[in-house]
Length: 353
View 1 (cartoon, rainbow, N blue to C red):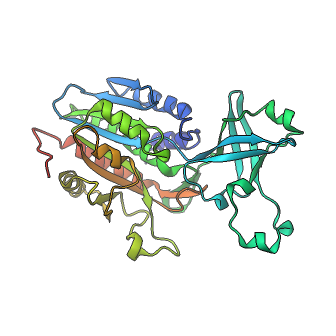
View 2: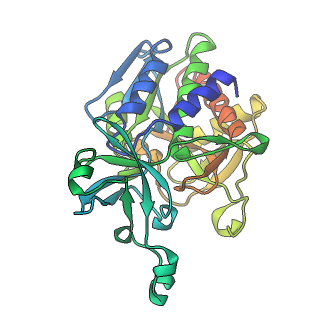
C-alpha cells in the first residue's frame, strides 16, 4: 500500500461516523473524490456519490458503507453519569473498561465506559454477561449540571479512534467495518479512472446507515440506477482460535480479497471478478452464502427492477470490537481487483443469469 493511500485510510479510521452521524467522514470522502470525479454529490440521506463518464450506456456502482457502530447518549443521572443506547450491534462485554469519545457540538469529550468492579459484584452478578443498562460513561463530571454543560442527550459516542499497525502488514482499529471497504471502493474508483478512458459510467457511493438496516445503499442505488454493482465490506477471518471453519468457511488474512458466491450474487459478476483476478495475478479467496447477505449487496440486488450484484470482502478478525484486524495487502489487492473489473466492462453486456 502506497504511503499516501495508507495515510488516507488511517484518516478514515480516526474520523467518527456512527450511523446517522457520518458527516465528518463524508467531508473526507468529498475531499478525496473532488480531484478525481466529474461530479461529487451528497443526497438528502447523506450518501456521497462520485461519478465519472456518467452518461455512458452501462452504469457501474461501487458501494462501501462509511458508518460504524457506536452509542448514543440516552440519560444523564443526578451525579453526572451517562447511560447510552447502542447504534448497531454491540456485544456489551466489548465495552467494559473502554476509553470512549462523546462527539458534541462543541467538540470531543473523553470518557470511560464503566461498570461496578469485580470485587463488588455478587456471586450471581459474576455469572451474568453484562447488559448495556449495567454500564455507564464517566466523563469526570461533578454532577448532572456539570455533565449537561458539556454533553446533550442524542450526542453520539465511539470507542477511542486509534489505528495501530501490527507485524507482517496487519493493522487494527475500531471500525475496520467498514472503513476498510470504503477505502477499497474509493481507491478502486481512483485507480480505474487513472488507467484511462472508462468503458462505462462509473459511480462510487460512500453509503450511510448500513449498520442499522442497509439504508444508504438502498437510497443511493435508487438514485444512480446502475446496471451492475459491487458492494465491498468485511467478512469474518477464520484463521484464529475457536472459529469452526466447517460452519464459517476458510478465510485467512493475507490470502487476498474474498469473492462471495450464492443467491445474493449475480453469476456473471462473480465470473468476471474471478477472471479479472486470474488475468491480473491477484489472489482471491472464495466464500459462500446461501441467503441474502447482511451487507449492502442485499439491497443493491433488489433496487428498482434488479441489479447484477457482486460482493467483495476484506477478511477481518474480531469484528465489532475495538481491535478489528486486517491485512493491508488484502485491501490493496481488492482495489486492484475492482479496478480491473471496471476496466473490463466493454461493449454491451447481458447480465441475465
